[in-house]
Image (tube, rainbow, N blue to C red):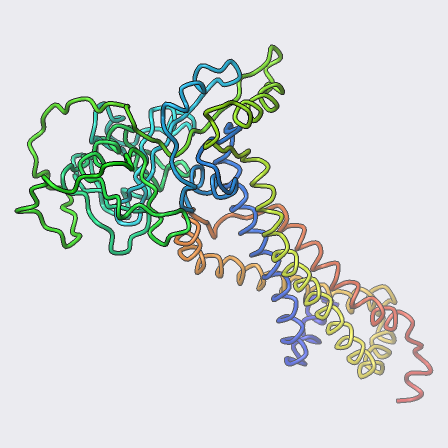
Amino acid sequence: MNLFKLSWKNLVSKPLNLGLSLLLVALGVGLTSILLLINKQFQDRLYNNIDGINMVVGAKGSPLQMILSSVYHIDVPTGNIPIKKTKWIKKSKFISKAIPLALGDSYKGYRIVGTDNQLPEHYKVRMDKGKLWEKDMQACVGSKVAQKLNLKIGSTFHGAHGLINDGMHVHETHSYKVVGIFDKSNTVIDQLILTNVSSVWRVHEDHDHEDEFVETESNDSSNHAGHNHEGHNHEGHNHEGHNHDGHNHDGHNHEPEKELAPVSEEGKEITAMLLTFAKDKQGNTSTMANVQLPKIIDETEGLEELGYAIPAIQLKRLLDNMGLGAGFLYVLALIIIGISAFSMFISLYSSMKERKYEVALMRTMGASRMQLFFMVSLEGILIGLFGYIIGICISHGGMALLADYLEETYQYSFSATMFLVEEFYLLIGSVTIGFIAALIPALQAYRTNISSTLGQG
């Protein structure tokens, strides 16, 4: 007696009941699975990018905004800070690494970040092609930037004023030249264009636009590191022959390569500094750094315009806030799974009432009580199993469809081919729920009284 075949025939004999039960299980499993996939990949990207960054120092403002703009590059900066106010940071015994950031420009929606070679070293990013920048107006691009914008070694481009790609003014005095392309790292570097800080200063030294300088809340989102806010002079620029329609000339360097004079730091600004605390003798992050650095910034005269943020704290707050919405969806998924279990139970219970005579005949033909119990239980288990398979297909198919949208929104790549250990737990849960839903009908089959049932027939 092939119990599997019997169970399957019993199920397909009522396609509407089977379809409803499968749909409910699949929706519950699919919703739970896609939430797990998005949450896992999103959190991995977020935590990877703050690894080793203990503090961010920038202009006073929202600490979360400071982290989002300077670490994740998905928000506008809180402002700029004079570079002379950060000199003490590199000398502090509490700090082992201080990475400067100068923001303000972008190219076709991808941010141009003025920094030093500590930033790619911090994220352990390797060069795919070319080399790191060595002088002003040389740039290295992340793997995603190179792929999306078709940039190659030797390509040239002009930065645009602002951090959003919406009618921005193009800086045409100086062009950047791509000298390196980073390998894919699944870090924030993939979506950035890196150059040295003096390149950012140089571009804005030639194009000081005081009227375009706005508060952080402005839609222009253009806090430009290196701007001197006093005495901007718009005269003396010869714009003849320049194309101001916003087109950038990729791959065409219209300026002969020449040695550029050094840019003075006098009066210059940066956006933020990413700090790594020094280690104590045991190799642990110094607890004194956590206490003393905020105190120094808060209490030292002359540092009033400096603010700071602790990435780990801000990220936890961000995820806690996001978790409220995700928690509601998890509850909704559990409700759907509960309804599917109830639907399976009603379907199998009704089916057993109709099949009492058939079950009694099977007993007379030699089927044992345990075989009947197993046959009915198997029906619930099969619904749970196939519902799980359909749900996983829905979740990973949905992830493939959402990947581009999520990447555009959060600037991180998401994969539909990742499978989590939690999804295996979902399989166990689905099969268990199917078995529990079939338990009472299976007990009915087990307790079938042959003589009374056939006598009623």
